[in-house]
Image (tube, rainbow, N blue to C red; front, side, top):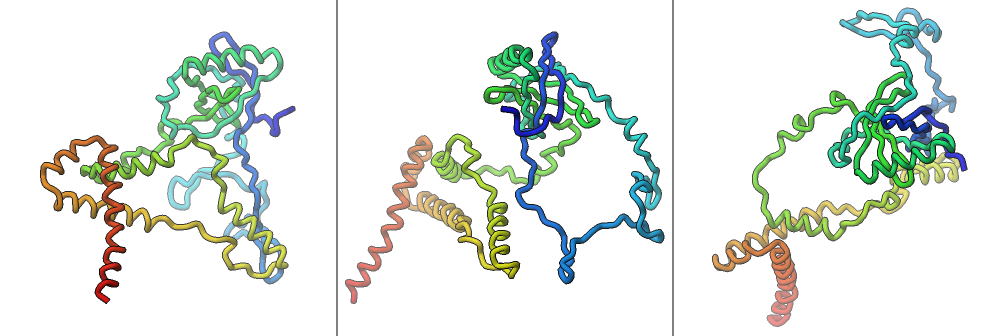
Length: 311
């Protein structure tokens, strides 16, 4: 069965003298489920755009060129021929010139994924040999690829039964993380708060399954469009479905409750007991916290019983 898309690149992936004829297919489905047009509401006519030059009016497409503004209102102009001459020659070979351990490449650098399929029966064996060699060595092949007149860093990696080629950002394309994170405080955190967060994370730890996640906005948009059509275009403002519960307040109150229990521990227990508990491993600390929380909740019915006794 042929792939459900057209190849975006055809060429060879090379490992020294071993050449793998391949075709690359985008791994991303960029088709939009729903798209909209701009409409002039009174006439119900679709809005059309015209290219207009101030003082001239509408202009034809063949009179438009690209310009770079080097100072306010001053441009240097470029023709299409100049851009065509500038394009990097479209090489049809991806030479793997370096092999890096997979875990040493920051995921932030990866950009767009492409499925690489063997091009022809003669390519099957070398394709599978390189795939298995990369898998056994746990490495990623790195080289450069030219597509659509531009040069990209490319990473070749085994993926399921085949090979995946991912374009990789150049170093200058990424902003330094330090310029964003340097204002985050570095003061020491309460170990028990981290223990609590660790416990919550551990309870929900599972292998990543993308099928468990849905594009909620796209689904809501589909429901809205369907309802709009059913109601012949009338206004639809009511909620499409029950909103997702907001757990924000619960998380905050949970942290507050932990802080209160910590303050009680520090003020209400003998120093020796505190010292012993501080030296206990994290699971014992969490168990102690769990024992304290039910005790705090048990006070409420005791007070109500006392009030009934007075009456």
